[in-house]
Image 1 (cartoon, rainbow, N blue to C red):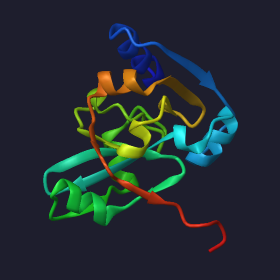
Image 2: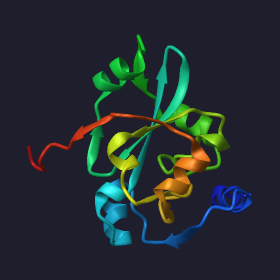
Image 3: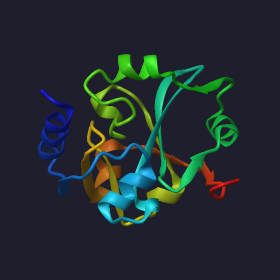
Length: 161
């Protein structure tokens, strides 16, 4: 079963209100925001990490970058790195590379949500492909995923610098 269908079944089973849309192929959060006509701060970017305690998902707004030093300090990790594409392929075999939804429950992974996106009214994210997108109230997302809310991101550098 394609991941988007499994994700939709999970959302429906948990009585979550959501919408599913399909847009042109978009490989970055900014491109997805543009395709969905959303502000980048509402688009969740999922970054998978490996630390001394294992794999986890970091979820940050599409207009921010993960501050790995901040994450390491905030979560008390001694070691922290972004996973390789090979690891992504093994962890998320039912997703297009880099299009995993920030729903750790589906993969047995903890989720850390950036405090900045946690306060947004709406959240939108990839549904397993670079075309499928899920939109929902952030409060619903938080109820289902139960992420740890911490500061994870910093402002993105200006383009061209």
